[in-house]
Image (cartoon, rainbow over all chains, first blue to last red):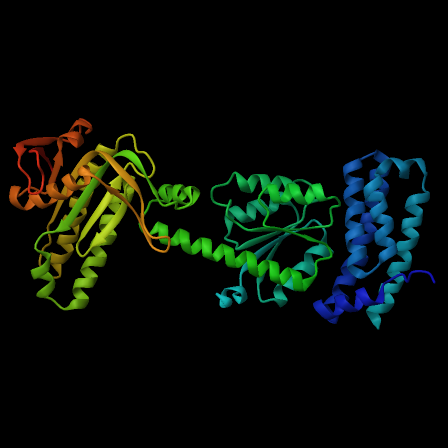
Length: 115
Length: 347
């Protein structure tokens, strides 16, 4: 069975400790911030800015894990650890895969947000 | 002690990531704390230098100034070095954790931070901070900030060292009949005002008050922190004490209250200085012949009818602007050999 886009246990725990209403706000913030991080990764890759690349990947990893977006977290972690070079060699594929996973996460979070 | 863990504190959360910042702030607010936010290390340091915080929650990976740089700055800052820092990070690698702890971080929590663990760690850090603050507060009551800092660093170890310093004794002339002639609360108020004035004069010149007994006090200049001109500093403090008492007397005269007069004795030389007492209750003090001589000189002010008396070693260390008058070699009560006594002019 494939890993769920959002781990339900992690998300439920977040709602329980921070409050469901607050988590709605937090999701909204993430949905604004995450596309900026993806854009940051793209532009850092384009200009070869390793620090900015690592920081953006690090942020995305951290937020992914917060919401229980485990696959997104793992993909971002990979980028944080391996750095800019492998992503550059892979052409656009690595970041495209990340963007695709983010699209799934965004859809799932939007649904959970309305639940 | 249990109450301390639940007391509300003012915390600063530093994280460049907005989701992390908001979530951490939310968890802390749910625990009853008030929270301020900063988006990078540079902004955080500005806020820390401007406002008072009880604890810092610090992310590591940040643009402009990262967490390591913040920790380095805090260690080198006298005002901020005692601020407890809990690192909240998702940085990989044990070496990063080790580096944070070595740079003085109190604790390291991995993000996403578990709120229960967060609460326990913050409680423990705040408790330690409040104990340290209390200790500092106590020290400040009898020492200057520089001396307090030194005591903090030397760790209040019981044990003595031999130092060269000046000792000052002072008391209020004929205080007992005055105390008995007025209501008790007035006596306490008088003593409190008097002590406030005397502490100010002593601190202004780098001395520490080592003991208070009734209307008398003992102050040390040159220990625990060496003071190159301890003789002149003690004499200047004495002159300021006399001046402040004169000003205080103007106020008392206006309120139709009796005047007070003080007597001061100063002696300088070698003495043994250190904490004496038990591990539970100790005071910083000096002992030796020099100390006895200062006490005897103070007592002798009543007989000599002078306000400030000093010994030859103190006189030899005075600067040209402080004049003194030789009163000759006197046999002081309790001293085996006669003492060359000088009266400080203007005192």
